[in-house]
Amino acid sequence: MKFNIIALAVPLFIFFILLEFLIARKKKLDYFNLHNSIANISIGIAERLMDVFVAGLFYYVYEYLQQRFALFTIRANVLTWILLLVCTDFVWYWYHRLAHEWNIFWAVHVVHHQSEDFNYTVSARITVLQAFVRTGFWCILPIIGFPAGMITSILIVHGLYPFFIHTRVIGKLGFLEYILVTPSHHRVHHASNEKYLDKNYGDVLIIWDKLFGTFQVEEEEPQYGLTKPLKSFSFLWQHFHFFIELWIAVKKEKGFFNKIRLLFKKPDVIDPGNREIAEEIFYIKHSEATVDKPLNKYVVWQMISITVLLFLFMGFDHYVSAFYQVIITGVIIITLVNCGAIMEQKKWIFYLEFGRLLLVALGCSIIYPNPWLLVTVVTIATLVIGYFYSIENKYLQWVYPTRNNT
Ligand SMILES: [Zn+2]
Ligand SMILES: [Zn+2]
Image (cartoon, rainbow, N blue to C red; front, side, top):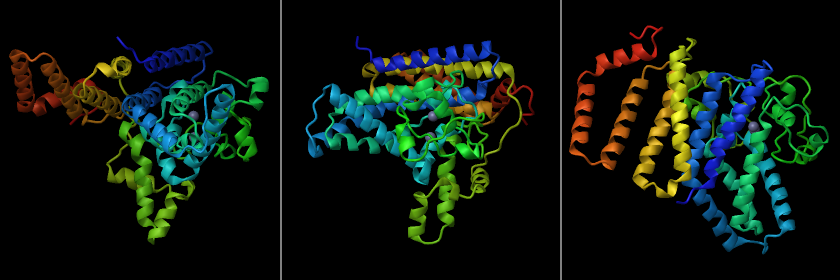
């Protein structure tokens, strides 16, 4: 049986997150907030899940470009591997810098910066949309002449490194601070303190920031997150809020070329008040109510279950038919939206739960095409529809016992 070793990234990440959590707890450092961590990991799960579908596509894009447009013939040897690493890091610097300086790219990258905590779970806050933007930049590598196999291998290394710099438990690293991007440098990058804004874009080497004038050493304790915090755990809102804010800004702008130009201007030209307009359009209300302990457990167990499901899916995706890939993806995405909505105390999660159950039942009925199973599923579904409102009320009382659900 062929196992995709990329899936091992899941237990590896979990191991380091737990290690960091235990170290922080032992030192009595308040670095982890449960809901922030769940929000961060949720985004990471969605990205890894989507990666199963798009990673192959990216490989073929690199291969196509290299075979058609390569400027040089490059073969793998020690020197070309080092050259590729340096080129990749240079391209990353500019990708990352423009992701902060152009609204159109910031709309995608903003998700990585929403967390007000800073720990290993933040490294998971990458969206699949970001992978598409980044791949656009990586396309320069096959055009130079690097083969697709070399590029995808170096991107794995280059993608793993930043995981280790998202931590507060590692201080400054002596002489390494002069060469590599360290946790201290990246803490500055995630800070919203005025002097730390738009600094330290590097991924592996810190030399690019020093060369292009964006370097800042860590001095006072950083304040993490956006200059205007999002205050939302909603899976969908975290992904799309800035697209809506940008769309509102584009609509306000007069003249076609000014509208286009706005997409390539810095995010600070966008009126922060657009956030409130966007929240009004999409009925986004921030619930201040704390989530009850049993409900937190319900969310944690859902996260554990889909992490295991994701690991198995990533490891054995070759053996899963397209139909079941769609079912598994649906169940995982609904669960992520559900967990975010529970933390926000939304009432509509009942519909999601119902939809998820139907999806699971559909999957089971097709794996085991037993008429009794089908009859049971249809009967339960009919009963739920028949007594929809009373079941919904009972469900809401169960998930939100301390709030008024009327
Ligand atoms: Zn960034
Ligand atoms: Zn980061």
